[in-house]
Amino acid sequence: MTVASTVSQFLGDHSVNYRVIPHEHSATSRETARKAGVREDRVAKAILLKDDQGMLMCIIPASNSLDMRAVHDETGRNHLEMVEEAEFRQVFSDCEVGALPPLGPAYGLTTLVDTGLDSRDTIYLESGDHEGLIAVDGRDFDQLLQNSRHCNLSRDWF
Image: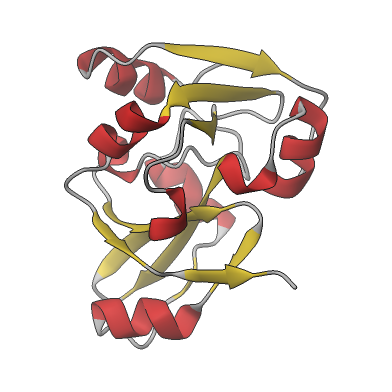
């Protein structure tokens, strides 16, 4: 259970207090929520997309799925696709593949945040590995992503 150095530095630079919740190894954000004993709609899941304009991070509740049409409507970018593992490592060299911290600004990425994560009491973030979840106050999460565009990007799984 390690917090990625970029994440730790970013949280420190913004004077954000946080705690790390250890959990058994997990492969998905929904599984992480279950193993950590937190609500899926409070876990911020990052999805990394790319096109010829560069990378884009979308942050949505783990309980939801990304609505690509909404992303296209918000950005005007119609050829976005998922980032491959090799490209992931170029930007997130301090993270395990698949344990993407939902803090795009910390990594210099344009970021969209789903409004379903706005104004929550507590938000949970991937720490950069598959065995730790970071808990931050919802107001701090909002402040960390205040310069990102907040919009409706996701829909319920069911």
